[in-house]
Amino acid sequence: MADPQNQKWPDQLWVVRHGQSAGNVARDAAEAAGVPVIDIADRDMDVPLSALGVDQACALGRWVGSLAPEARPNVFLCSPYIRARQTMQHVIEAGRLSVEDVSTVVDERLREKEFGLLDRLTHRGIRERFPDLFEQRRHVGKFYFRPPGGESWCDVILRLRSLLDTVTREYRRERVMVIAHQVIVNCMRYLIERLDETQVLAIDRQGDVPNCGVTLYGFDAAAGRNGKLKLQKANFVVPLEVSGTPVTAEPDVPAAAKP
Image (cartoon, rainbow, N blue to C red; front, side):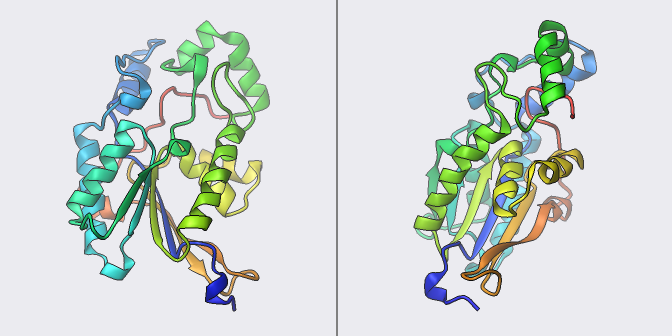
């Protein structure tokens, strides 16, 4: 059993994808229409929640508010993208969490994976406009493929290693909710659960991370020499289901073929 004084992790860690965004809706419309470019005027970081995304964030917030005070998150770490920041705000407001009881930190290391040259392109658009990149990605696989001007999953994981260093340094024994993006959720799982490429891509192939889906870890003092975070729930959507809020799981922009 680990000595509580040596605990480096939070007591609980929630990793949450933002609510459905206007970009998710536009991407679905573009794919259905078979057009090469997703019709989004805003920069990706400025794309807001859809009306349904607001409902999803509020449903999650009400669930958080229903937890016992000692079980609610008291630290929120959030991507700087508008859709994530709006999700955080709705969770806090709908959960009636006191601003005196929670701290909120917007951290650029939680930003969406950068798609570079492929930004705003549909599956068809990537294949037609950049056939060489399309084939390179199929060959290399999404874990290592880095589009020009963009990031691979490995690049995202590198910045998340730094984020987790901050979490263990500043938020040990706290209750932390991270609100970010689909790739961030999967890459956090890769790091916390100590997965390899094959394992994390197998999780990815099972389906997209639901909007406002919750992946929850709890600290287990009996695991390892000084305790570890253990997975308790993955892509948990009961907070939405019990409120009758539709569950969505659209990929983020741009669409990319599964390896």
